[in-house]
Length: 519
Image: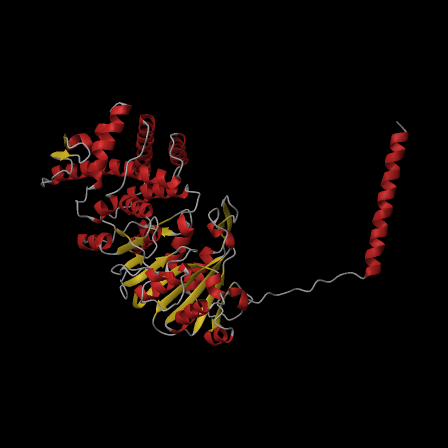
């Protein structure tokens, strides 16, 4: 959890980039990510070196030896590429040193053939002014000083650093291309609770953006692998842990390197996602730049769990659409659900956010998708969310679909979420009213507490009823609104009251006139 001072420093960082000439929030967060990464490299290397000295093991520093920058073709001692070294330089010298030496060095830090290097190949360090770089370096140092204080108070490093980066991302207040925008963290946590990812499963996101769902699944798994006395509760009411039960290094390696897979077609999002995962301790992220709707992507029957909030609008050229899709459409909100179904293994699970139109749209493609969800999958639940959940990005009404590939759908559990713990206006300030804890509780007990009373917040609808309603999955089709008849007085009684009020007004006016005349 971030302190007030940390939030203030992050706001200062945003303000400095804005006044320094980098107004685009995605560009700013990308450049900030590079600086955070430079600092972490120095910090991690110093820690590993100290650990090696303590255990008397051999350690080769990543800053050992010489580096030849491809920009200058000049050899540089790698020790000068450390954050702790260049932060002491004068402004102009620091900017030149970072641009021509440090940044080219970090671009290939995991090896020239690594996924990281591949996506960083055309990355550019564009901080234009020495003053901006100096100010940013100082603020980032101050942020890590605050993180150290939080660690001394009992917070884990990755939790606090992760919260810091998420708060940075939350300041992006404009939606990206083709309807992309960040999913609120508490909604990600809710979806992880609904789908329960487990250690040893392959977990993916076909439209990962900044990597929020992958990190949500990572944190959920860590919490499940944490001793009860180490569990804490975060500001959204969800349990958090750090995985102290994972004592086998091979399990950590499997979790960090072979569990999470993300894809996005936007280069900037891929880089931000890579940095986000690395700053959370996933040292070698599997995030790739590819359009998972296209013919180039062919990972069918591959994943145990898929979590996603795909773009809500846009279309793809018909000639580029993957030939394995069942739907005859170019609408991306439909094709992404088709992609998820294809990518899951039989028995694989998914929680995906869709716009309400997917639930009741009348086109053949809309109806065909709903038939696939019901007949080729077990559509277990639909959580209807209020339209303000994604403000200030968008006001569209949405729902969470929870389903398993394969099996048959016998009934569908609906929940009418009316509040998510935040106001539903553009400010999204925290409020007391919150259905999310109840959703988690009722979801886990849904089969024990089966309820077909459509007048309550949550209820089951038999599949027969869904089919009779032309496969409509909108909650409004099934939820019964209980109307309480209003009782009104007879007209003569109402008229009598009006006359009494008129008389009272006249009397009061006369009293005021008498007071005025007596002055």
